[in-house]
Length: 416
Image 1: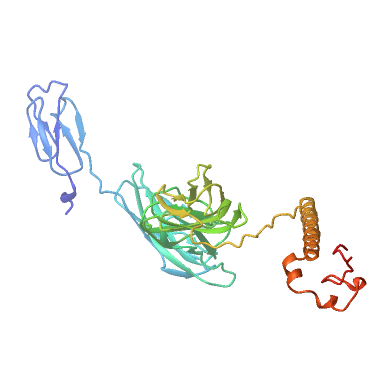
Image 2: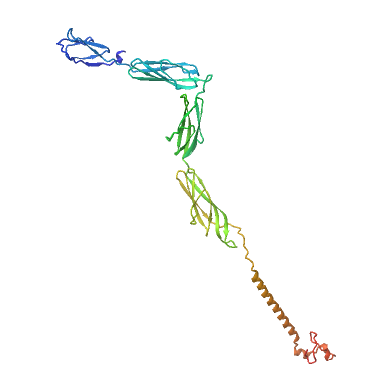
């Protein structure tokens, strides 16, 4: 078994002295009479090479002795109460003694003896590591885990819990992460990774935006002032957003009438609205009113149209990923009924008075003229009727008793 770990060495001996043919003993049950012999040593050790007495004295040749690789082992209890010293043992093999020892107990404490004692002041799981150095500079290591339970005056083990305000949604998804550490010995140090290769964070709480769809595991680490460490994870699911779409609608607010009968308008105020869906919020809205006026922006907007309807209004919506969708709506008052007030024409006072005065005077003159004509006609008697039938009023009467048909006194010759 010993020779299984040894190597065979070929040694070339170059003698710088003259041996005069004397033999040279190689010390391993062998000899040579050559000036420059070659011999293979099969066994490790010191093999003196000697010549004849009185010749060149002794020539000692030392073959290298190969060493087994350096190895180390650490032993200790799997658990211990908080505040109670725990014993650890170190073992080293191979290499070249003497050895030096280096212990790290996982809570910031160290030791440089082969078999140290150590008491933990906080509960938790600790990784104890050992490093062994030999005299040739070789290094070997070993480790073990010890769990420290709660005890009187013992700090609870360090732990951390992680949550996400929104663990699922459509891309791009902005997620706010929250971490809650407990136990251990403050102050705490934090480190975040978000699972998508993006920028890390070193704050207790962090915000990260996922740009593409996928399932991501965010992880937070916390270290306390004793060097204890704990971590927690949150899984975030991101889906692709549905296609962006938009629908435009209009509502007439009022119409400015331009005539008393409301058959037209000089202006019309219209409320325009757009409803976007899908895509990636936030959205921006751009309106073209279709009447040559400058564009407007906003999800809901009011515009005053002037001129003759109809008009074509178009809205274009853009999402956070530069996706676009458009929709249009026809703006018209056709079929709508508006209660425009009737404005009566003003009454012309002076012209009406003059007209009435003229008409009144003409009526008066006409009435007087007709009356006079009628009076004159009654006074003229027909000669034929007078000869045919004498008036009864003249029978048996004198000249003084003659009268006309209307009762007027007349002279005998018929003249009044």
